[in-house]
Each structure stands twice: as C-alpha cells, then as structure tokens.
Length: 177
Image (cartoon, rainbow, N blue to C red; front, top):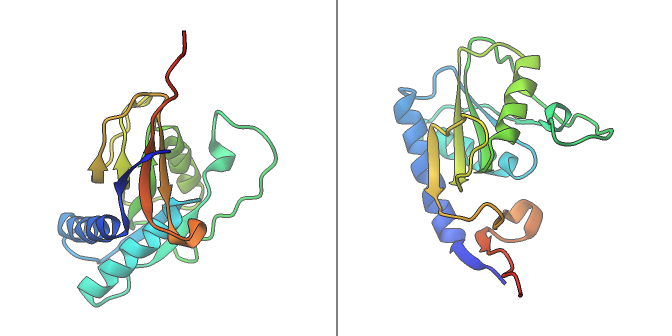
C-alpha cells in the first residue's frame, strides 16, 4: 500500500500552474508545441496544451513521442507509436513526461525527437521529479519535487489509462533479518 502524494485536485492545480509557467517563460504560445512522452507523459501533455490553449486563446499543438526505440536499457521489437502531425523545425518544444528519475527516458526522448526535426529549443516539463539522476538532465518546469529512496516506486495514475488521477509513493520493502 502506498502513500498518496497528489490526488486529482492536486494534479489539476499543478498542471494549471505548469501551463502558466511555460507560457510565461516562452512569452506566450507563438511557435510553441508540446510533445508527450508515451505512455503517461502523453495524457499529461494533452492537458497542459489544452490549458495553454484556453489561457492564450490560440491552439497549442500537441503530439505524442515514443522513446522506446532509443532506450539503452531495453531490447526487443517495438512499433514506434510516435505521431507528430506538424513540423518541429524552428519550434519551441516542451517535452512532457510524468516522472523524471534517472534521466534515461528523457535522453531517449531527445534522441527520438531529433529524428523528427530540429527544434529551435527544447524544454522539459515533468509532473514529478523524484531525484536520483544518472544523467545530467534537469526539468525546466516541475510540478512537484519529492524525496525518495532509489528503490522506492512512484506511480503516476492518469484517468486515461488507470481510471483515476493520483501520484502514489510505494516505499521499498524493509529487509528482514
């Protein structure tokens, strides 16, 4: 059983704050696009893009990016589920993932992104930063930083896949002697 760190209302407020921070840092939505890292970064990205569209009154394009083919810690045949129906060249890309931990997924996502175009700039937005980086990658926009042990598990549940929105911390099992 885990500890609920964020419930549906917490996530909604946090995404609203992130949308405002991203727009402020980019001086509005001009040339701004959002890419969600599959799997759970994609629904988070759609929500942020929708909120920014509401705030700015102009559509902020959003698409999904599959980083699995560029992972260095997984093997196997996977079909690339990336779907980017707009040009990335010269755009300010906000890459969105639900959690940043070691930085390996973001590194893979950056490699996948460069296959699809050359953006003017790439920024990273995450719902949760749990630390323990293995690579020198930091988010530009962070919903919540949490303190974890390296072997803890942070589970972000999104309504689109899990039927609910929450962030749960599952502590590692104590070692019996």
